[in-house]
Length: 220
Image (cartoon, rainbow, N blue to C red; front, side, top):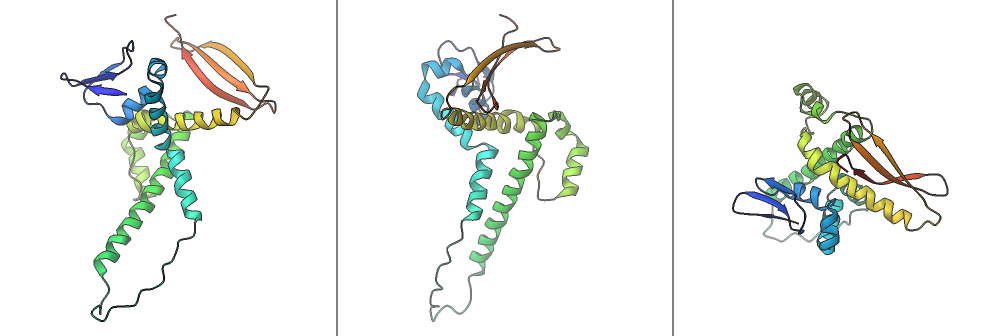
């Protein structure tokens, strides 16, 4: 999907794609481009599908669904083993290590839940991402819970939001595959920048509308 070279820059492996960035290739940034690159999708469909799979599996929504499903599965309790004659005390080191692991897993689940809500505020309610970089925001998060480690705006922009977009899109496409009589609409608009943006939606017979794609065509 992306490759480093001797000049510490990386770009897309698809011939004809001019995407190039300086520095080391980080996985989340490589996936952010790979999942939306039409040239990669056309020339290297297997790599593109791998990027889609990796990005969707690492989304907050997918991780929360997996973690919450695991909470509903009752834990299997192993029958107690007979204590050996030489074993007079419990292994406290193993118990402490298990306790730390369980505590960290719970903290990470809480972290994902909070980040998922913040991501919705950014994408659905217009929360400006730069707000979460303010010291007052971090102070607020610390006052609410010391278990939450404030996530940077860059992480939301390069990882959480792109991965969630892939996850949601795949679920939408899967749902639409099961429905006949789809109404497809293609519409254009101009932003205040101004930029020309075109959007594609699919509407099902029950009048629910799904956003499918967008195309920025200011230079066309």
